[in-house]
Amino acid sequence: MVVTRWEPLKDLMVLQKRMNKIFDETFSRGRGAQDVDVSAWLPPVDILEQGDEIIIKMEIADVDQKAIDIKVEENALTIKGERQLEQGTKREDYLRLERPYGTFSRSFSLPPNVDLGKVQARHKDGILRLVLPKKEETKPRQIKVEVED
Image 1 (cartoon, rainbow, N blue to C red):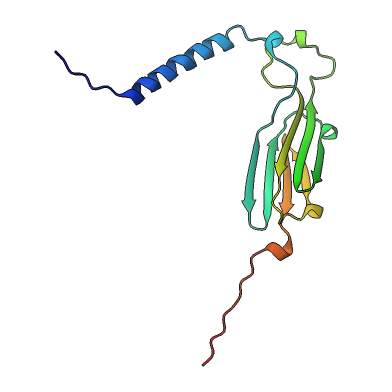
Image 2 (cartoon, rainbow, N blue to C red; image 1 turned 180 degrees about the vertical axis):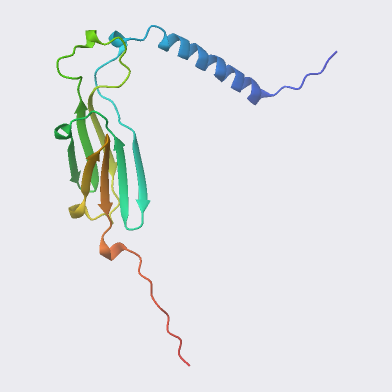
């Protein structure tokens, strides 16, 4: 009789790979323009803190600048917009349509140290960049200790 060591994590990984393959084959087969839902979508976002400001980068290629609405209310930032199909085209004209279209809305809680009156927004090369400066009074201050003789 041969003794085989059982490795439950290895078995789980094999099972997951098989399930992923089944889902990929099922949902990617025959995917064309008629399969894509033109509705709400979520553009990807990067948020970073650099020195005295918080920077939010949102990928919104082909979204008209006039279709972007940015609001800051009670320490909450909300970005809304819409990506539309090109004028003069219909969904039936596309052979393959993979990018999401329709409206989007993203909301973020802001820390209390953000100066809401100085928020800046720029849209360039399909990236919306928001700069949220911190308030002066909340910045850390270095205090020098004097030594007495």
